[in-house]
Length: 341
Image 1 (spheres, one colour):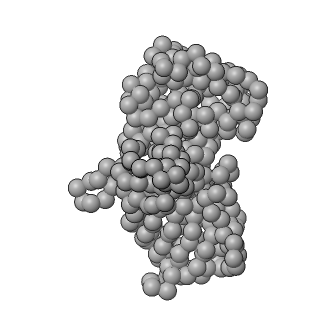
Image 2 (image 1 turned 135 degrees about the vertical axis):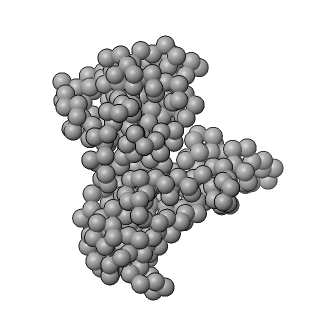
């Protein structure tokens, strides 16, 4: 016996990827619903490569009664309206927006890192999926924290335009084409030209000079991994379509060598270590697309501090950073609580 699963925001980048991953991982669905806004109602979308077509249902009229799990990829606005409705009707919401992440009675889950925290979902019937840049980072940090106890992390991100949705991907494509043919480039989605450029600004600025994206990485890491870990983040948008990269400098309480860290990361869940000290012996965003792993390369000792490491971390942000993590949460929920299948 399987579950009745609704994907809300099914026509967007992340929603479509959720459907792909549910099909790919053969998640036990007795019934699957694609749900979106009224303007998408009635259109047909693929349920992965199963050959099955799903007719999109209107979120405004969708009744969540009798549905087991709703994967929300609809953004904070619609989520604020419909997630509490779904939860009140007995459907467990797994939400990809930032709306509930820092609510104390809503678990914020990365299954490889804090699976036990999911037990708190019963307070609201809502589980939060973390920010894409946070998700891959904590997968990399968790095994090292368990072994050597992290004190401080300094991270610089290189985030792809797909993190800004379809509009971000379209803007990179259109600007690149315009530059090649000599047309004028006008930023719309981003604050400055993104083609052949990098922009050290993601989300809104806060009073202390950081951006909200940087704040998310700090507070979410503390909630998921350990409140004692100090995090300093600089988040940068780069002209890459899919795949986020991160440069991490980590300070530990205990002595650590690069070889010890490599040995631990090689066996860590969700991690793929590709670290050859030669030309091409590392992973770039282009190579991680379509994969669920968090790739680690360039592991080396940081000579500027005691007990320090530096490393490079790459992941498909539409997968581990969003859709895959949400489906993994659903799988974890099934194993620990729903237990229908």
